[in-house]
Length: 346
Ligand code: NAP
Ligand code: G4F
Image (cartoon, rainbow, N blue to C red; front, side, top):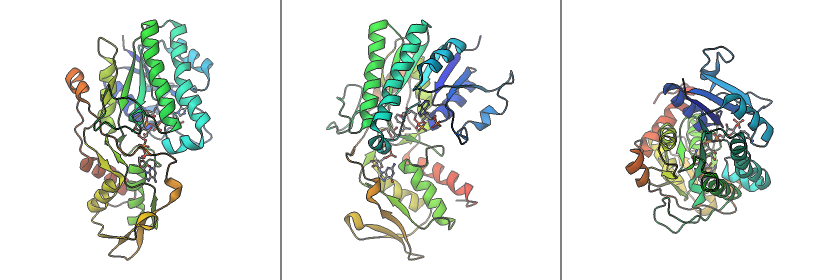
């Protein structure tokens, strides 16, 4: 019989790649979707065309991490072998504007799902999408499973709660409940208001003459950026281990937002000149003389995570998992996809 998996957050970047991976591995894939007034299934459309039909690639269920009853109903209907909790209010910047909601969904939503699993007494494994935002204002040169947490946003605090709750259910009830502490991972399916995708999409739009200027916040923050399809493979591997344990997944390389921006402009053969300094800094296209990048304080956060660099040696040793895609390849993959949409070939 096929293994059954439930993915919360299946309409998001990671959920859509994980659904594809599990289908390839011959799972029966069930996704939790929330009702929206506009269509929110663009990333999984290609898997949904025959939903309701016995050969459908995935099965979708209306539910919400804010609604315990829907979670209980879905668990009891599906009786999964594995649950991947990827749903969250996942934007760090937005979490400063909506701290209560972020806590409700990203932190308490995990409680609701874990409680639904515990009370249903199903023997399913549980994966929690933990984040390198847990490390926040870290002083460690590289962060691994032993590095202390210092979250810097309502999002980071909510993820810290969910991380500890997952461990607590493992220790209290003997449940197979694990955390994947994932560093930033990107792709052409990345949400348009995360910085890498904002950059690749805006540069493609600027080249197509559809946008004048790209406005950004802090260019100096450094992140460990990987490629999302490789990271969902790591999630699955974490769930196949005989013992439930927590793992860091990262590339082991770090780069600033500025590095990523300049790398993208280089890929697109945009020759630029940097002008001004501090909040008045701009990038001008030397061919057109136009300002194509400027700073906007709107995108600065009340507290910033300055530096992240992951040490995924435990994942390499125990899972045989390693990130392969470099930041140069990642930028190229994302730029090609966004330029293709504009009819521009690289
Ligand atoms: P994403 O693209 O923003 O997707 C988030 C998903 O959560 C979407 O499917 C969204 O549904 C769903 N969701 C939001 N609120 C919900 C609610 N109340 N009930 C049910 N579903 C809800 O995020 P992602 O990049 O794929 O990340 C997946 C998970 O990993 C998130 O928990 C994120 O915090 C965590 N994470 C991500 C990274 C990264 O670099 N990508 C790194 C570490 C951890 P809609 O489509 O309806 O909005
Ligand atoms: O792309 P970001 O919004 O990602 P951030 O904050 O690192 O969070 C992402 O990765 C986490 C893992 O570490 C996940 F848990 C989380 O769910 C999410 O997927 O911002 C990256 C950096 C920040 O320092 C931000 O201040 O880019 C800086 N930045 C500069 N200008 C900007 C912008 N970020 C955004 N979103 N938009 C800007 O215009």
